[in-house]
Image 1 (cartoon, rainbow, N blue to C red):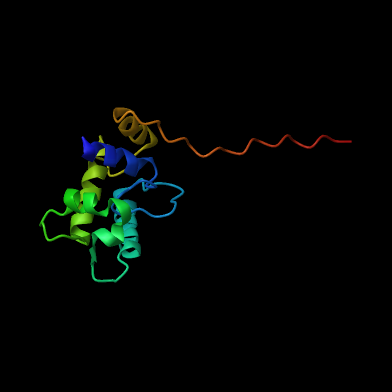
Image 2: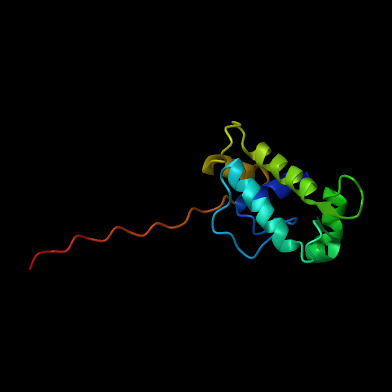
Length: 134
């Protein structure tokens, strides 16, 4: 169940992604390639000592829980490979038609499954009225 909640948060916009959180990301990755780029960038930003691992300290308040959840080799830290595997597994679960792209509908369905509100699309600017001749 925690995995599904994590997936829902990740695809809502990554603001709450516990492993690789960053301040704000305007649009969540929609393709697997974008997801991989995002994972790499967010991992590098969190790896403060540049040792190739994320420790509980680097993950903040929820660090110990994230280590317990994602540290598959039980060495007390999360490698990029462990983080990538977890995040791509979430992507694959949300990408229900397995086309390598998470559509707005798939994202909304994942959120609904978790009882979370669907992410709202960015408001489009209203069309401007045509100028009236004088």
